[in-house]
Every structure is written in C-alpha cells, then in structure tokens.
Image (cartoon, rainbow, N blue to C red):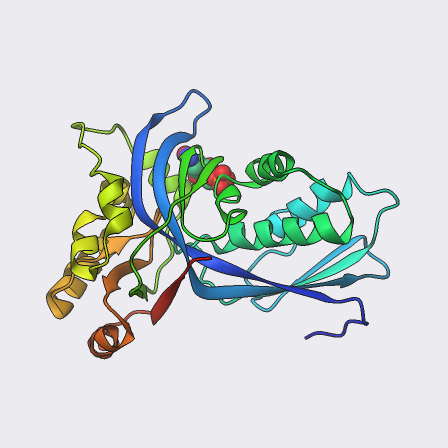
Length: 290
Ligand code: C5P
C-alpha cells in the first residue's frame, strides 16, 4: 500500500484497557465524570506519514470500512494542527489498522494522539504539554490518556491524566467478540451511580503483583448499561468465566473482555479453551510501562 518518497515517518499507536472504571455522575455538558485506571498494551496500529502532492490531507486505511474523511479522528487532528502551520503542507497518512473498532480498546483515540505528537514535531509547532492536552481533549475524550506513556489514572471527562505505576508484571488475556458496541449508546443507557459503591483503595492495586488478587480488585461501572445495550456480552462473560475459572472484566464501554494472568505460560492453556468459543480474536497482551 505504501508508495512514499523519502520523508516518511512511522509511529505506532497502542490499544488501551480500562482496568477500573468509576462513573461519578452525568455532567451538565452531557458527558460523564470518570475516574479510571487505564493501561496500554502491545496490540497496535501503525501510522505512516509523508508529504503529499495534490490534496491537502489524504488519508488511506487498510480497512475499507473505516472512514477516511472528516469523521476519522486522524483527519480532525491534521486539520486542527494544520491551522497552526504556515505555510501548510499537503500530507498523506496511511493507517495500518490492527486494533478492532467498537471494542473499548481506544484504537481511534490512540491513533489521534500518536499523530498529534508526530505532527507537533514534523511541523515544529512547539505545542506545550498543556496545549497538546487541550488539542487532544478537543478531538475526543480518550485521546489525552494516550499522550502520557504507560499506565495512567484519568479524571474529568478524560482530560485529567496522571501516571499510575503498577507493580503487576503479568499479562492480559483479551477476548474480542464478533460484535462491536457503541460508546454513545452505553453512556446513554447509564442512569445513575446507584448505591454508592466504595472505590477499592487504588494503592492496593498499585502494589498488587498477583493476577488473581488483581482480578479481584478490578471493576467497571458501565457493565450494567453495556449488558442492556448488548446482552450477548453478559452471556459471553459467564461462558468465559465457567470455561477458565478466571474472573473476566469489560474494558471501557466494551466489547472486549479481559482477565489478568501471571505470565504467558499461565495464559496459554486458557487461550486454547477460549478459542473453542465463537469469538473474533483471542490474544495475550503485555502491559506497556515505561
Ligand atoms: O469524546 P468522545 O466523542 O470520544 O465520546 C464519545 C461518546 O461517549 C460521547 O458522545 C458521550 O456520549 C460518551 N462519553 C461520555 N462521557 C465521557 C466520555 C464519553 O458521556 N467522559
């Protein structure tokens, strides 16, 4: 697919997993106030950028079902940052898509963050950390969390990001079902925090090195709304838990399910069992920490 001259630049964009996700309430702007611990994993898209000839922004994607116009976050980032560049540069962006969409893995947001950092350098925009965070938040709620490497704790709508060091050195077993789930539909189905469930002390989570203990600490307040939108996911989660004897969790607004394992050799036999189910992808992923 690539037919670029010498000035090409390549960046990778990792997927994310929400290890915890607390929804604190609905805000007056329609978004939801969050408190979530999010890690990045080694399942990634690749973005190739080079100078273009004709069109100002040309976006290509290896997956034909992904829009390559103004609906794509890569387009939005290029357009926003392009307004700060004078004279402007015509560029071609190739997106080699590996991360499934509608899967709670943040692929589109990660792509946007990676391109934002690349264009800031390429065009010598000199954006400060605060300006980068603001540009990212303007593109999407999940984009800022990808500007800070490694595991982070996010707050607000997603614009507040702080590093969160995990002691856990195991792996995650990820299961992507055959269906996608709409984030907007899940948040629309969320009604209230219900009974105030106390947040388990996140300090315990930081220090936790055992996969079983970590599986006992993780939670996602969107689960009830997710199962309302997509009852098949609840059924799949139960199946996975019966089949493996492990607790499974939903990342973000779904549809990917995951469980923590001590190491790849502990995850291996589970992968074999899960592959017997009609799911789209099963993958053992490493947590990326700087
Ligand atoms: O910001 P973004 O466009 O990525 O968000 C997608 C949708 O997810 C929003 O339209 C909104 O319905 C929901 N959302 C939310 N609260 C957040 C993040 C996302 O309600 N903190």
